[in-house]
Length: 421
Image (cartoon, rainbow, N blue to C red; front, side, top):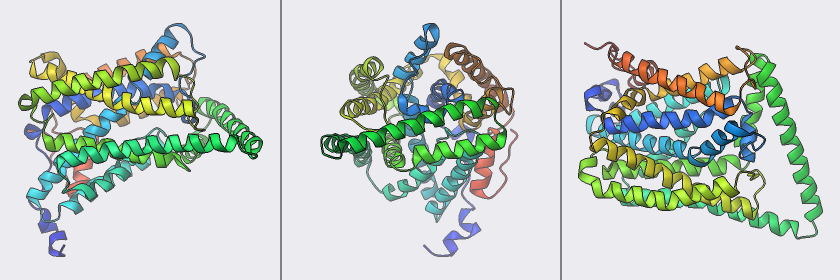
């Protein structure tokens, strides 16, 4: 790669995707994914993130429990998978266009990834610890290793990486079981009890700090939570799973299944059938038998649930996407209302965190813990409805959402035209 290829002139032909060139179906699916992500995340605006390791909060009752169980079974994991697939599709489409337009597409791609990672870092430290953008940026870097990989090999790589995380979990469970059956077993049990005590203390501290702590105290706790969740083995499981899902999305983009759906009706029907056959029973098993799993310390039961969760996440995600696609090609007009929210996905996603941390945390309005899961889910639905309306209103006047405009301007090192002509 020569120095001239990296000069500003090399990017003179590079421009963001014009609104009329966008893949409308992908925007619809992305808008739907936003809803699922919010329905899952709303729990952790009122619950410390480290509590995620203990599965469903079974202390809830009535409508609160029914809401939490439904989200845990049919939403949690499925929509981050969907967002990851869409991320893989979007970045492959971006890179393929860049290859056609500029001399150094990898550098342009890297700059786009870097800016996303910067957004993610600011979000995860200063707004809310449940950020996914930084993880996407890290995993997205590895996509550069697969730029010339055929579509039929991309999805195999993706499935292999997801399978690797499942295998590692089983090996961890096996290793712990062997250790417990050895002379060192009592010592290991004591260590586990100590870890549980640390986790319980952190969860209790989290509830207290998020409910009444200052902004500085919240940031300090958030950094501790992030270090505990992603340090050690957490990152080993999370990054390969996300990268694997992104590679499957890249394969779908190269196969054009969701970018040219009319030409791939049979493939979409197959995705629906296979997704439901594999995903629905797996999700129901996890929802019935896996609500009290302790994922921090692997055991055989946890490994079984972890495996079925991986199957359910990918299977139901693909089924949901196939259903939306069938509705789209069938001419159902109501799903068109999802597209503007999908075009402003970054803005809307970050807005979720800003609104609900301000609403719930002690340094804001301070409603942390005041409402049950059913009530806060209604709040989430109200915000999502407002975002559907606002996104439509905004895009009637402007070409991009505010954060999308900033992302594009930073990627291309040039302020992009904002208002519609």
